[in-house]
Length: 261
Image (cartoon, rainbow, N blue to C red; front, top):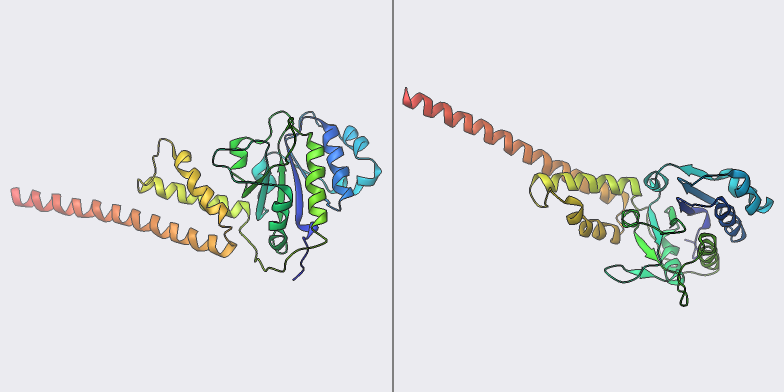
């Protein structure tokens, strides 16, 4: 196995960029560092001419293959590992620096598609967006922590490029992609509500810790399939016991009626 990061498995995702020029500048930064896969989610007042002007002819191939999506979930559906960029620290967040994050991705990148997500310029990624991420990365700065979107893309892409020069040989099989993982979590939430394990009035609050756990342990695709099978079996058994209870109650009511007559 290669001991270097596979740039062809890396995608840069710009979520709701407000300025077309930032898309072009990000494309140029990517091209400088040998990264070609660009995905843009719900851009504001998108103008391809302005994008193209900032990207210059050197990044024409990045723009040619660029994909535009309506939602972040759709843009990440086929990715097995998602890294969110954030300027906010503290709380329960576990946030890596770019060099450490990239080193962790070297073995993962061999068999898995990885997305780096950058939030809109004025407010970054929301908590809902961050729930789609397996891990978070923060670019350390001095007193002023806010980076231009394209500048942030350049920093991350530079770290990714330098990781093509070195790395450790570690085998990591294909992990579950975001679509598979989210499907499993939806099934799990439904069955946990049915068995009264979590509060149906605010299920997302209770699911946050469960979601964090499953994204942190980096489930493989086969493991997700096994867990979904277990969830289906629990759901089937719960429904069966409910039906059996109804039949037993009907039988008891019938016996009681016969006894009275």
